[in-house]
Length: 545
Image 1 (cartoon, rainbow, N blue to C red):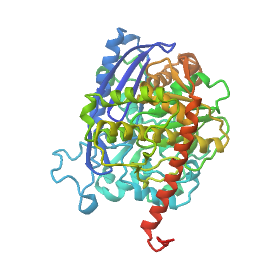
Image 2: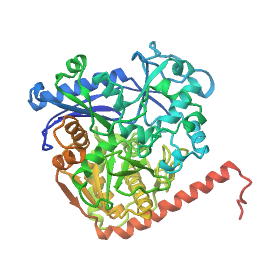
Image 3: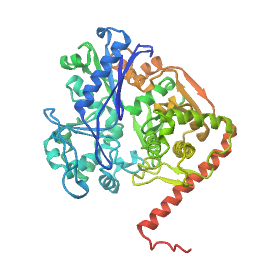
Image 4: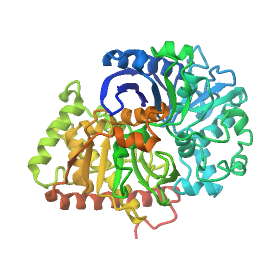
């Protein structure tokens, strides 16, 4: 089985056996364009080429003959791909004057950048317009629409690129685009449509057409080509076309299964072995460029600031609660790249810094590092649990120190704040009926011992790490196995292919220190909100009071 994971900067592919063993993998980068602040775009043709390269590499690495590969599925970031009805690309880059001014030296191919990346925040105003409707669909989004979802991006496209909107006939979530490229069939996954397109999978009439018309998308179905019904994750879409099989280095014997969003694949890959038991005490944390915190329950729970409950968005029979952090690894990158002492830590600064800090927190035995330095990590908004895309980051306790030691302190405070963001989400979920005491960690952060220990100590939870080195790819390979008919449904495939967990328990000596810092973290949220109120209306409070 082949699982393909399209992340923010690269494509990974892995070939698995039916008992979940990884036999081969490969990675290929993808190109990204950032023509404006908060505008992030990719080229779907470039992504497909990278997918093909990665799949060929994984099969070659495994030593398995292509004829033996009978199933493939895709997970991807929730990015928006815009195409004409005949499949031709359509550009999405902002044009015009003022805030919409594009690069003064535009790309010679205006349709090259046809994909609005998940982290793109151009549609904040449109998201606010959606939230102002008070529509029923908002109950399943934690109460507010996010600019990272697809409906606001479609609204932006129609308002600001009416030329592109008028030409469109097929608009996809990225995972569904890859399934279409592979089969030529216009099917969509229940995961992508439910989590990002306001599809109500539990409802007899899953599309709220009145809401779509209310936000100006009365021609939604005509322009997107989205069908009335979505396919369950792991449902068979069809075999690879001859062209796709040739490009991927596979055969037309290989069946494509309905895929899912990348973080949701991580949830399936890490929680899949526990689907037959009570699961309310577990959360999947998929932490990389951004982070998703995912809980599964058989009883739908509505949680302010947490997306969901999403029916079947990870597996049939379970409702998903999804809390997100829009910049985690990306924030640590930002902190390192902007510090004058970065070069002191060599070509892999995260590894070097992490090793030093891991040794320090191990030796500190609960004593505070940089006790007066605190960070609010909302540099790209607060997705959960505050649901505020306009939130900004805060650093308290800076001095004029430009040394390597000051970077270590700032990195520690930032990483701790990211972990407190997870704790904040867990607190909100537990208030709604969860009893989370175990975090199943996957993604890039799971490879960093400093971050792994920090998540355990800061959240007071056991950390479970899969024995599989690629749990996100494993989740997608589970979908491929279900689609190829090798198991009786997705849950059975997940239980059969799941890897063992290794547990790391929190250090009880660190609890008091993290409780103090977490109290500061919550106070900083309150103080920032007060500053925002004063900035918005300086007459609302007496600064001398």
